[in-house]
Length: 262
Image (cartoon, rainbow, N blue to C red; front, side, top):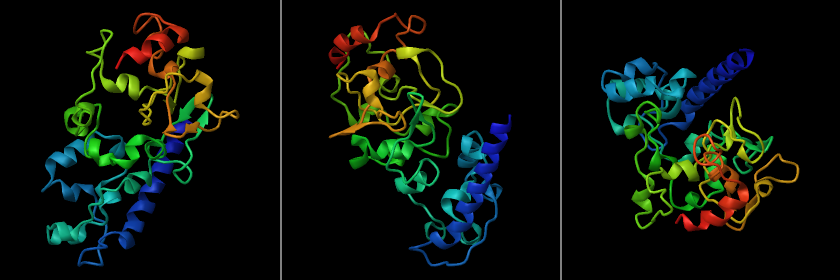
């Protein structure tokens, strides 16, 4: 309970930092230089779908309103135009909140990734050079409540030629490539079957790597090779193949079969 309240206080504090920082950062390429914060409710009249979608997100739950990303809105309400509001599609905007440290090191603890560093993970993945957060995500919507609006592109939109075998054709790509390798609140399972409660944003699976090779010797960071960060098969496969969610396998079994999936 104390942790939850602390997280909310931190979220609110960050919100105010972002909003009032936006007074100087917003409108870099627009005419108005002075604008004031007016609150998300003022956006509802013209953007009811975005407002209702936002209300169901974690952003709303932790008091990250429209102006946390779009800057103070008084000028836009007075003169509705793309020139009077900040629209920043860069990953760096998302990275203000969805990162740890400088965004360059993927932090870990207890053989799991720490949560809240999607930006760090994206930067260490092959996607960094070809996608942005908004390529896949619409931050106005919750991926658990309005998934069809929150996820703008499927994996096959960019990987149309990818084929799946071994009877796994009905399994969603993210089940293997975005497994719950990060932990925010509570992990489950033991040993090779241990998983977190948040999806990883690394995507690349290194099937030849042993489970322990995903993390540094100290266990405090994720490892990188010449292609960046990677997931190991214990997360990609054994999170489901634990005898409960799918047929039981061990790490040696999936090491032999994983290269045959694609």
